[in-house]
Length: 257
Image (cartoon, rainbow, N blue to C red; front, side, top):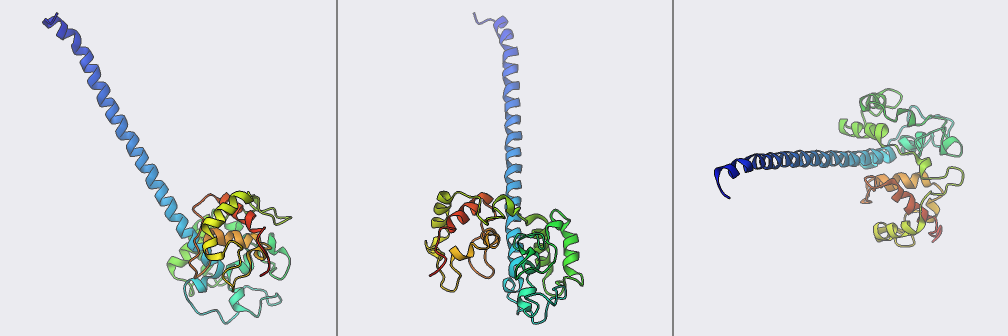
């Protein structure tokens, strides 16, 4: 039958259907908006990773990164009785006092020729970057007239948010990476070998990778942040375990040419 009575019966159904369509449309809009926010957040995070990487390069050898002359006078805070007191180009590097593992006197630099007796930067992990900038510019550190405002901010961000817990990826007692060498070989051969060769002996002026693994903390820092003034890619934005896997493979590479 097709009388008015049937039209009245279908009307509530049609209303419910229209409401369902409107609800679904609004829900889809919310989901898309949430996804856009998530993607935007990831983009901001990724961009911060590049700044952290740049800060890591400055921590390594800032004057080479900014193409400045090497320092010619000793850093004011470096102890005069330590190994590198007479080498300003060494003792002005952040890593020389605070170590590649960021722990200073409590880490790998607790003894040996690089030991300075100075504490690490690990105590500033999570600190307000503005506070770190103030420390970098104080009379003890003396970077206020050596680095630009942007460079100071990048270095401070690295100190605050860029430190990696090296003990998660390197066994401190044996210096062995906590990685999968088989996976690391695949990563190495596709990412690193083009410049360094499958044997890790290139370029010729570089210490062989097998020998460099005597200091795995330095190697991990450079894998994550790159090499100052070189075109080496930084893998900081990738899972940290990839760096550990690459290092596990590097331990099998020759230590001599």
